[in-house]
Length: 136
Length: 136
DNA sequence: TTAATAATGATAATCGTTACTATTATTATA
DNA sequence: TATAATAATAGTAACGATTATCATTATTAA
Image 1 (cartoon, rainbow over the protein chains, first blue to last red):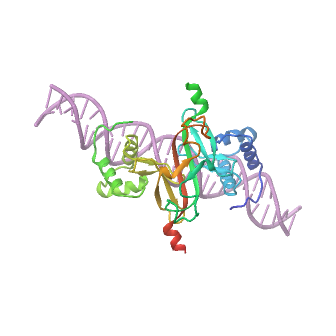
Image 2: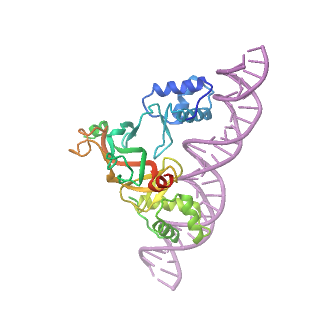
Image 3: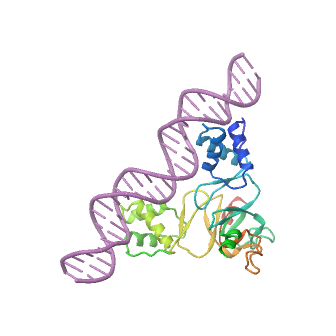
């Protein structure tokens, strides 16, 4: 895991923005927000820092099935629920998802998977409760 | 779901290639393969047809967390296991994955999810049995 | 306080993909 | 079977997201 050696106000501003922002912004949204504070910040700086922070394990890069990558200050294991109606992005705890046959011995031979599972990325698409209520 | 109205040898060749090829090729791999048969086929034609076929429900587009999209002639609900060692792509039946709280009443209110789940995309990263054996 | 070097802003380049357009192929119908 | 309608094509330009380059500036260690 890479280490960040020198510190910069641009990176601080990005971290501050991510922590104060519950959603899952993409690079351009972060760029727009940081520009309010540091008007001549460069988009390249945003990307460089986001990747650096992700490699250092301080944030998570979410590769979306559609559209640009998003970034999340939550680094614990979790997936996402995307409302196909309003587009909102919800966090879903990892332990809501179970892999059948992965609870027993822990031996990959006993699992129904083609090997040893190390991590699981998942994205649930559906309609959130807010949108369901609105429709009713 | 869109309908394909006229038929073309380029599209036929793509379908044939996908069915004769168990893996999950990306657009460039398909392009290379089709060019053997139709040397002046255009990359745009490959993309146009792949998207058309996916919209018609004849193939599936797999949006990878890393790298370009892949295409799969299997259209049933399933996810993927990617070996971080050899890069191979395995199919995983959808029913190996369970969403906790999604078995009961079917009511989204009872689920632990933020709404009604319509579909689940998942990608398991790990080390496949072949690679595990090789290491041992 | 200076030397070493990491980070920056500006911008060019890259990659995967989509859009455009004149031409060609397929289909329905006369 | 000839013709008209139009979908699909090849070629190429354009696009959005991201990464690379590079001269300059900021941070850190000695």
